[in-house]
Image: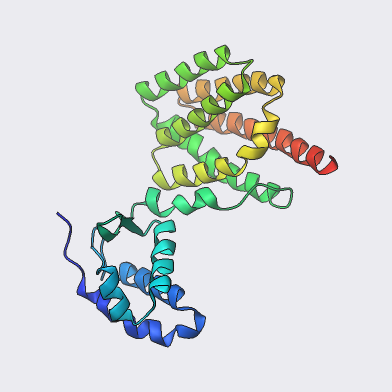
Length: 249
């Protein structure tokens, strides 16, 4: 059963009016975030109906819908067709979802992207090496077996590669790192699609993935970090080559 609407939300109107110059919708978004941060709105709370919000806030329907759309993108509000708007579970996986749409990979942000991937993914494999269960290792080894079967199929490799990196993140057991890693991985997919047309890259990735799995299997975080570092270096090099070649076309 849905939770009762939190009456604290009704205080929002004054803040919207005082912030009208910076945008009505933005003011609504900011106030909702403040109410959640202070605990006055909690996960599962149902917001007042659209009609009531329009009257309470004295704003237009388009402004209200713009604010709700922004809160939905942020992972804060879940708008259900015909069922109203609810504060989400506010879990990290939900709140960090906008990272998936952060920006496209380009020559300008390539270095920053891979610096970030190193910070996140090296910590992921370190944790994975320490925490991996028998089931985790069995799954990773199973992916290596499949990898050997798709060495000539770039599309199959890309699907498998995304599963491999996602499995490492899940093994590490940190949902924030998992979501950030997922967003960073997705930033380069358009470029990686072109890079993985080179079958030699797929062959090389098998060796690097194997080294990562063997280190995790041995529960050796130092070797796992070294193996992932080498893997990311090679990914960055091939990605940079694709971008540079594209800029010359």
